[in-house]
Image 1: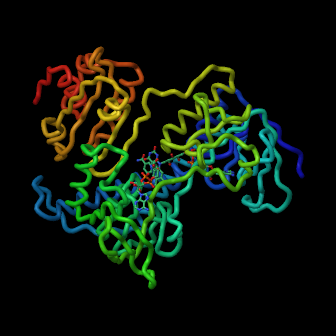
Image 2: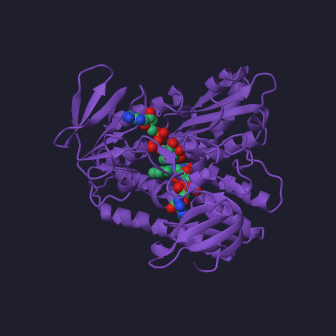
Length: 470
Ligand code: FAD
Ligand code: NAD
């Protein structure tokens, strides 16, 4: 074995959790080694957030042009568009490349040592890296550290009776199609199923979505998921709710479905995208030898991202829900600053969540039902986008912004919105909750006109009984 590398901080995984922790550690002067088995940027930059949003943009543009090719109310006349999916995927890949190369450059700038290879945990302070991924034969590289940060992310959950392969694909394959199928069955009406199902439908593919629950996006309340369901139906997406997938037919060409207790039906599909959730990546690299406290497959951490073993930290998807890139990044910063000697906790007031469907859904903090369940007496108010001038000029008046606040002192507890372009409201929602704002703070802040943000102000005004434009 080559001489061991000695470092203060060793990070396993170069996704948004791991690479942000490494950059912050570098800024703080902490000697840091980051081991990545695949590509810097992790799921998020390579096969998740960024590629999916790139394809959502492609499909959105295609769909808009198609809309104008018919009877465009805007007076724009164009011919029917065509899609060159290979070129679309190449464009998506160019964005991924620019971002992942940027991460590499940032790590270099902050003097982080990046080692390409699969990490195998030996003990809480020792890791071996398999060099074969770098095309090199020979013994593993041993790394010793004072602090070990686990940031190995997550992977798609397979249906046991219908494993990935052939026509059964995960989001990874769906994000890099060589050609578009004529039909796609999507199992799971959550984030991935609906974001990517919308992409394929807008590009002209026949799409059917199968969901075990009785409505789509069951993590959100029904007021938020209803406009998305209506838009999917208008787009021609088949929604099979309260429906179980039993498996493939013998010839493998169709899915066997059962709705409630009804008779089995068949649904033909050229490809099947299984999007029934993701599981923490906690197996296959010696993690179990540390005997850490676990919550199922997730590594259990406390409010400072510490595991049950001293000097071993964990962040991001490996630590379970919510599996979101911005949570992983914030945890990464939190750990790096503690290793630098600062007292830090990961106890955010809210972690915003956005589903990039059309219309988009955004939430931060408590919904009215969650606040009621917590026994809090609250005010809630909604402002419809139909009454917002900017939404009208964008031809996107379906949806609303809703606020939840304590009744006694008007402290904001949560925000929700559904509508085209509302994802950008996440910043205002998160900031107001994190700063402990009250309804009056938002209501008395001048919001630029005409913007969707005015609906945020109007929701707060309405909760105070002072709405101006409804
Ligand atoms: P990951 O990004 O999964 O990174 C973990 C890294 O660890 C990987 O690069 C992996 O190769 C490496 N690794 C694992 N084991 C080892 C080992 N033994 N040795 C060396 N390296 C190892 N989140 C959002 O917030 N917004 C979105 O819009 C969004 N869209 C998404 C769309 C899709 C299709 C998917 C699949 C996910 C999406 N997510 C989104 C979720 C987001 O990608 C994850 O929450 C985020 O990537 C988690 O970051 P992480 O650092 O914990 O793990
Ligand atoms: P999800 O948890 O969002 O949705 C899974 C859906 O599948 C649920 O509605 C569930 O009821 C359904 N389901 C489960 N088993 C089923 C079965 N056997 N048959 C039919 N339906 C079934 O999971 P996902 O869409 O795979 O996404 C995984 C994670 O990735 C998300 O939870 C999120 O953390 C992250 N993600 C985030 C974004 C974003 O932030 N915009 C986008 C994509 C992914």
